[in-house]
Image 1 (tube, rainbow, N blue to C red):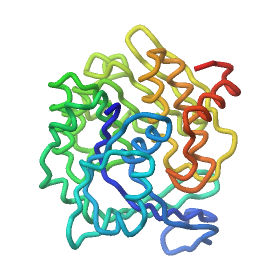
Image 2 (image 1 turned 180 degrees about the horizontal axis):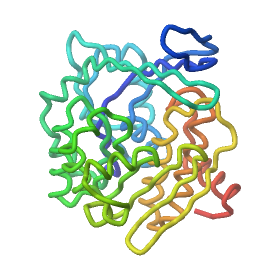
Image 3 (image 1 turned 180 degrees about the vertical axis):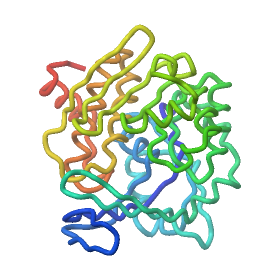
Length: 307
């Protein structure tokens, strides 16, 4: 496989609201729906549509099949050997409330994702992969062990800590980031991560483990890519926003897909920015997925770069 994504498959209930009210107050729900999600599975689905061979490691409930999510991933060609169905449990539920300015509040119910605590590390799947992309799961120790197996077998580790509550645990960040090749963050997350790692700046972080660090600016959706002796500034490619959910996963998917085709960090960053621009144009993270032709065509139109 080109990319194995490790993290919770979720069913996302997305609500577009008039505002995010203070406690004891109300707001109007303008639009809502249930969509396929999960940070790591988003990356697998997006990259599969682009043309990579991808797989997922996760724990799900019976509603994974009943909801149509399983059929959706199989149609994309995603390898599901690493997906475990847990009896008498529901797939992790996410409730996301977004206001017109793109601010969000998220609630979740773990459900089947708690089964990560009992799952064995999929050593064989990791060994046959070129990149292992790790994001939130039901057990941070499972993620650390997956990163260790990948690193010890010369498989590139990609990590997106996101807003996972486990990122408040220094042991988790240290265990994964020290073994990471690609690290994806946004600018709001950076100070807390540096503090928990007891580092002062990005240059120190580059000596801690990661070879490539991509940081997305939450306000203007631009990004900055750091590598040893290299810094690339990538403008946002977003023109139209319907729903920002999954935008950062789109960036990671476009970036990693581009990296498998070219080692040029500026081009990979542009592809990440362009993939994110597709994702935000519709509700749900996996609703508006471009193929490679569509991705490269928009990259040419926006950045005047042929890939």
